[in-house]
Figure (cartoon, rainbow, N blue to C red):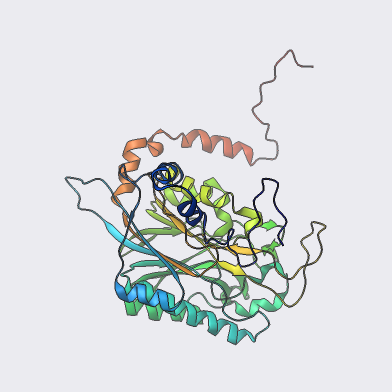
Length: 406
């Protein structure tokens, strides 16, 4: 039996649910009266043009495919105000969260093929739903084995331009005319087989537009990722696609406000945050960071987290004095979209594979820039001066001490 937490609530169940519910949203629906729930959701999720983010009806082939595959499929629509000189710029975007499909003790080829087959099913459902731009979760093609520090898992690393996961995404991009963001463990053969954590952006014609390598590497508890790769070298690229300007802020980069800002300064309209993070470590901040980034930078954010508990053959430790263990917690899914006007969708399931589909009117980005003037009122010259001083070894913080203090 689960040990009650101090406030009387039970911790998440072994199946990843919250007291038997798939998400906080489902708990609220079950226990808060409808007239009160509207007020709760206005505060929690914000309003888009003075109303809750609208649900989006999806085509029957998509809903039927999701039902057959036990995929949590949700659809929403973000509006922008009508303009006189510009037509709406609506793009349909998808987020995929998935669990691994074979045990980590299975042969690596079997593990990769199983997750490829599963993700193919979900992308086909997204294509049937009319998705034009889709992003997969961090290192979707493999178990998130970075906690183990065992180098055998490097076998899953592959070429960004020609590896099997890129080839699969290219095939599906051509099939559906869809831009696909493909986050993988990259093996850079040109530079001595260096390993990177990389997002490959594949155009709607199946071409590789480019790639971005993870800027910030965690060294937190079980997330010992610098055992495998180090900070990326691609800056803050924005990819101009057939459906808008997109960028990819990979996982741990979401904790760094200036990382989000870099993509905004380069003109991103939509930033994906493909992640792999567990409940005990980060769940309270998960709903906040992506939403704050969307507000502060006047763009949309698609926050994606993998789902499920992954158990490994050998026990490993975290350097925190706790006993060795074979898993490092439950990946809690809960993927969602956030908009620059502070509105957001409900979250996908905490314990099931999922596909989130949303229509985004990109005109909202400029409208919020005009409304709040964040970019116009920022003091980049002042920030640049402080940062230039801060990175020097003789930096002195600007602290004015009360002369009456001893």
